[in-house]
Length: 219
Image (cartoon, rainbow, N blue to C red; front, side, top):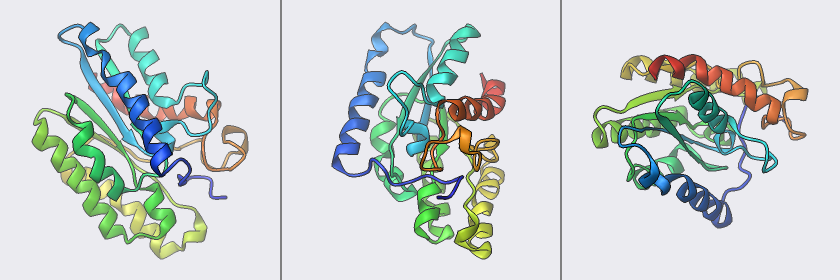
């Protein structure tokens, strides 16, 4: 199985119901927050959702929340990851997610596009539309783009075209950029689940390190 890509596990109606319940559980208790508390929205696929982790094992967005609290920063994290999401599926559900105020949007999508062989130009256009929609809804929102790489079996030409999506979008939109979300995790068996694709609890701690290097400068 490819070491550095997302999968389609958890998609479909049941997966979306689980996402809605998890999202509401995080998004609704805003009345108890301080008026100046700001929101970081992690919007992605199974990597963000924490596919395959035990209930007591936090995915990287929850680990980011822990670091924020330890630093005494007035931010809350919302995990809007949904296993199986492509960029097209993310674009369809983004408006619903943006009904709550978002100050930082961490955009982690595209891995499933790559595994399905979706044309990179289409993935690029969907990601650009998501960036545009977030900024139109919240002009002061900072978008952080998380890059992804594909396994060798996808072919060098396609892999290269796919890999260029993220740095080019980051430069065009002047967004903070995480070059490769799974840096130090992809391809390392002891840091992934048995499927060889999704990080285990130890892998998510390293992913959190990768994200924190960029995110901490924005807080």
